[in-house]
Length: 205
Image (cartoon, rainbow, N blue to C red):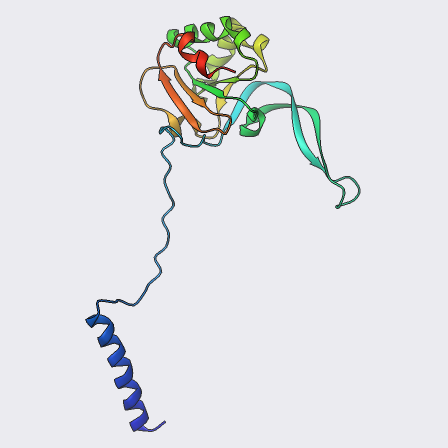
């Protein structure tokens, strides 16, 4: 390539760059997208992923796809399995979901559990999840025994947080904290401390 041709190319590139600077147009660069941080305590926020670890193995009904002997033939079937782990899918139904975060040794939490139990007849479709921190594992068996919560399954499910759910939604105020989620699992309301059943009634289906 001749020196003259190289000089022409150099001058051409310099002219383009000069024009971009003059017009205030900088060369485009692609910036990496930052992940959007969700505030799970705001009304309308989606419910975080949940993994609730029960201390007991419980029979539950699950739905799954059965492919049969052919990949073409598919249908949804329901079956009963024994498990001690519950996720968002286990509580999926066309109704609100109440998640109560509690400490098994907390007097206010115990009283709120009794308030919910006395009104169990109101819960036709709405489910209640009573979730304790994993550090409370040694206290949970006595709570389950004394409060007789097994008798209220599947309306009430008691267990330990195994997916950092509490850290995502906890307001660090008075226990218990009650989060209410819509059928689409969007946050409707947060209550802290003692909550009268009359306050919860509008959300119970």
